[in-house]
Length: 436
Image 1: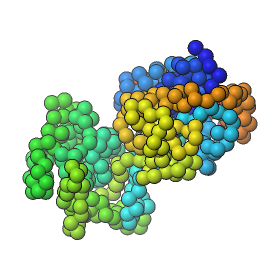
Image 2: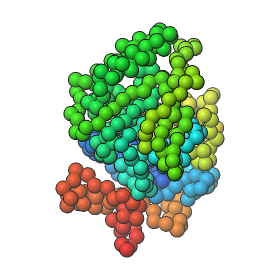
Image 3: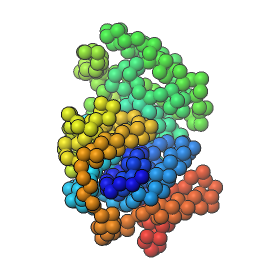
Image 4: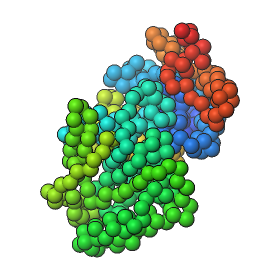
């Protein structure tokens, strides 16, 4: 099936790739723009190090999408106010629609004192670092013997696991604003970490916070099961280290000496309930944790400099969509521009969610296309415009050369997987710049 429509998809993570595939299956020609050299987004750079089978399964699906003849891939091309092209410049190329699936590239900040101290980081920076996404791959981090992670989701578990298993951190504390019943990690993730949890100490922590749970009628057994259900499949310890929970605790400041973090100050909280929603309220009572590293695992927000209006850390959606899918709006406030994946709902769900959301966003785009005549945009003209940038552009055939080079390097080194850690190395491996 073919049709004359031509759509720009911005971002080649799971949402963008599966959205592009859905459109391409319906005969739409796609120009897929990606800030990174490689496709995959968080599926390539956000999954835990040792999950090789999962990563390779996703890469196989991504390759199949990129192999479609009506998908043009432009890697190493950034879109945004400070990018190679602005969003308005992309729209001016004459596309029939634009699907923004660039993820949530911004990081949430609580605006606390001491956030700029050495030793204070955002989870995404560290996850990108250990998954070798340039330039995060080359960033230096300060890991001490004691660390605190703010948050209680799967990302917290991944970070704690990495700090203990790969950085030799001896003590990790998860600082959780609310109670044990509201942690967000799954038992399949917690099984990788639970061997480091002192169960006797965990019981004491549950007993400590029980009055606050009783005050709003929250069952402490819910929290116990969320943690202890992982015990039956627990990974064995590989190091001597300890993991703790500090429930009903909200960070208020990072304290340091000579520019380096030495303590985390937290405020005790109580739980309040209104309209069926639980929230944490500060009590004014504070205590400190002696730590050299603090990592915020509290979610992400979209890039405010991308070129679309934002609200509460997300791109603003049309609240009265003309083309809803499953009662969800994928329409931005700009005519012909749609949002999917984390660009629609920041930090929501894992790869499966992004796949579904990107596909549904594409279905919204298809509905929109049916209401208009094709603009007859020219793929060759778009390619020429991109090639006019004064920088190396990565195409589909280049990606295949890079994958072959990395596979060969992994084989030489006896590794399951190898990644070049810098854009320069990747561009050299593809023959796009000369080896220095």
